[in-house]
Length: 179
Image (cartoon, rainbow, N blue to C red):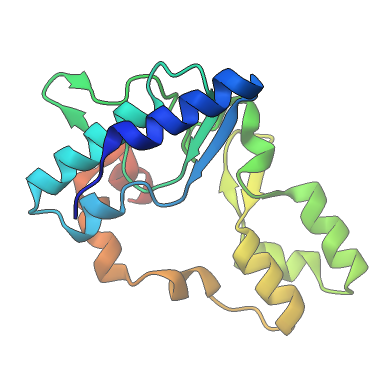
């Protein structure tokens, strides 16, 4: 597949120059090509070049929000996309409340829909971000409340075998945290 990197960037620049309005980019699973095509280094490099050309140091960018399992891919010792602040479940910084449902929200949902918070918390004790703050998986909470059945809903989004390779890579100490 061929991408003409200059046309999209040129159009976005033209739109910005005429309107002075910036864009917000949302890219879900930005790392898909690295996970599903791990052996295709040429495609990975082209994709990184495309993202860098589209997003790096552009006046039309207000915000670029990218989700994924893997940290921003690096070329050698420097980052191909070094303008991003990486935020993880382990270190969400000041945006912790947007990483999932915080305990207060889960309590309110349980009260509203007559579901036991104590049982829900036993099933989904959340990600402990600090001693005071834990967040709960929105998928698990919503599925439990709407189905009125507590279950391992997050495991239906990915198989353990598919995640094992990333756990073994131990990015940001993930494997250590799991152990």
